[in-house]
Length: 313
Image: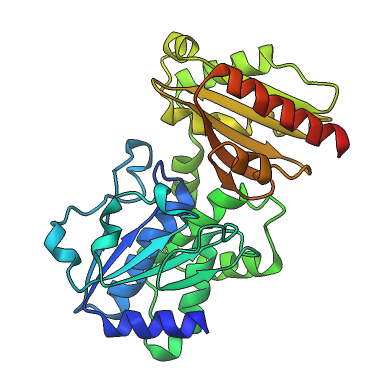
C-alpha cells in the first residue's frame, strides 16, 4: 500500500526535500509545508526542506528554504500537488535518490519511484492529513503549525467547502484540524482579503462579461488591461472565481496575456474541461483546469472547443 511505503521511506531517509508546483496555490503550499511540519515534528533529527520560488501573495503561509545542490545527494524527494513534471517548481527534484509523487489530479504523467494519487481527495492537503492518521502508530505527530497549513490547503482547494470535491471525509478532517490551536479567523482574513486594484478589475470583469448561448463565458485579460488596472499576471488567480455565481453559467475561461504566452484558466459547473486543457498544453481536474496557448488565434480555438462542450452538456 502506498501510504505504508511512504511512511517507511520517510522513516528511512535522513534528508527529505519537498517540492510542489509552480505558481502555487494554498493547497500546493499547504500540502508541501504541512508535510514538512509533520515530518519535523515526528522526527526532529531529520533534515527536511521545502523548495521553490517564494510567492509574496502567500507570505503569510510559509517561506521556502534555500539549499545547495549537494543537499539532494542521497535524499528522498517528494513532489506534492503536481500532476506533471514540467510543472514541478525547482527542477532539481531529479537530483535526489528516490522520488515520491503525492497528488490528487488525474495521473496522466506517472512519474516517480512511488506514486500515491487519489483523485477522490478534495486536495493534496487532505491526503497529507490522511497520511498522518494512517501513520500515527509509526510515530507521525502533527503540530499546530502543520494543522494550520493543511487546513488552509483544504479550504483553498474546496472553495471554502463549496466545490463538489468536498466529501464527508473532507469535513471530518477539517473538523479534526480545527481542534488544533491556530487563529482560524486570521487565516481566513489572509486567504480572502483582496487589494483595491484587484477589486477594481473584478468590477470591470463583472461589467463587461458576456455569456454565450451555450452557457460559456470567456474573459480576455490583455497586457494592456492588466497594466491599466495595475494587476500582475500572477494576481489574476484571485479573479477566477468571480463568475462562479452567475446564474445559467456552465463554464468559464480566463485568458491571461503574458510576454511570450497566454495563460488559460478554465472552470466548469458540469461540462468536462480537462480534456480540452490537455489539448492545449495543460490538464487538471474535470471541473478546474489550466492550459497554455501562444496566440489569440489559438485562444479562439479554445473558446470554440469549450462552446461545443457546453452546448452539448
